[in-house]
Structure formats: structure tokens, C-alpha cells
Length: 298
Image (tube, rainbow, N blue to C red; front, top):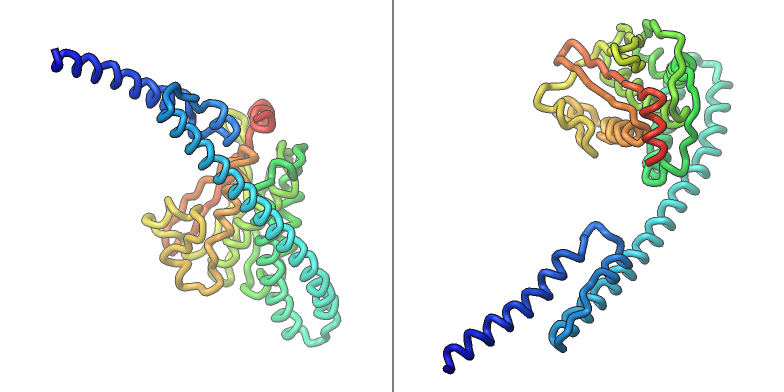
């Protein structure tokens, strides 16, 4: 009788305890917000179950307070960085005006190149800070690719002149539906990468075409040192410089990472084909109008 009573008690207790655990597993989705997690917690029937629920509730509340504090600190840090960047841009603009007044042509070119490096690094940091809140910042509309490409080439003029790099451009007269400012940033990162790793006295080829589905493709082919096949799958990873990038002190591994992240949020695809000592071709594929509508509506 004692054994039978024990078995009955054990089965009853097991079903009761396991029921509470199953409710935890079924009702709690760990991708939910803290408020949704709290609402989904089973209240429990026994004092033991209620104690577990209360403890989990307290832990979630503490975690939520810490997360909110971290968010506030992160926003304050971002605001400080943005403020610092804008303050630095003022003397940088003054420096550019002073450089333009230098009569020594050789010295002027060298200073313009160094000024451009600082300008590009500041611009990269500015967009890095804004990237997490990019959805609040972009404005979708028709953008002329030809105009964007020519403006970005003009920005890199001092660098190109120092390396004696030219451009061979063959672009279709088309407009794509995207955000102009962020597209300029994406093209700027790819073009600056092409100039950085290209050999001296060569041309960078820029051309566009339409694929069979009607997507516009923009290709940027450099005549540089290329990327090894082992490094190719990782070139869009954060801070990855690769085998060749380690040979250049100026390589940060951030430009392509930021360009890829910004492109993903705009529905733009970036493909790379590269061969060592031959060069790399970056292809930018723009979404169609109906595809962009779905992206914006997400």
C-alpha cells in the first residue's frame, strides 16, 4: 500500500511540477520584449511555483532597468560623437580654404591628400554612428547614378592625382529608387577602396547594365592587388583587413562593413569578384520599384 501510495503521489507531483515547466517553455518567447515576457510568465499554483515566478519577474525587471540605462548611455555617447564630428568639421573646412591658397603646387597636393584622408575617416565615423538609426534618416526617391558617381570621383580627385589614377566611365542614363545620401556613402566606400588598393598609373572602370529581371547593376573594377580567395568571404566583416590589408597601415576594415550594412537596409546587394594581382570588381544591384516598396514597408 505504501509503494502504491508513493507511486501515485510521485506521478501526481511530477505532472504538477512538469506542467509549470511546460507553461514556461510554451508561453515564453525569448525574442519578445521584457514587458511581453513578464505578461507571458505563468503565475503558478503552489507557493514554490509562485516563488519561482516572482524571482524570474524580479530578474527581468533588473535586466530591463540595466538595459534602459545602457541605451541612455549609448545615446548620450552617440550624441557626443556626432557633436565632436561636427565641431571638427569646422576647422577642417578652414584648413581646406587655407590649402587652396598655397602657391607651391607640390606642397598643395600633399596637403590636399592628407586633408582628404582625415575627411574620409570623419565621414566614415559619422555614418557608423548613424547606421543603427538609419531607418529614421533615409528618404527614398529617384536617384541619378551618373551624377552620384561623378560627384564621388570629384571628392577623391586629390588622391587620384597623387597616384595618377584615371577613370573609364560607361554608365546608362537611368535612375534608381533609393536614398541619395546613403547611396553616395556606399559608392564612396567602394571607390575609396578601389583607389587605395589600385596600382599607380592605371584606370578604374565604372559601368552599368540591366540584368534579365530589369535590375540596374553598377560595376566598379579596379586594377589593384586584389583579394585572396581565402579572404573573399570575410571582406564585409567588421574590422577584417585580410592578408593584403595587413600590409597597409591605413586599412581599418570598416569601410566595406559599413557599406554592406547600409546596402542591406536599402535592399541593395553587393557582390565581389576578385583575383590577386589582377584586381577586384564590386557589383551593386539595385532593387526594383515593387521590391523597394516591400523593404520600406518592413
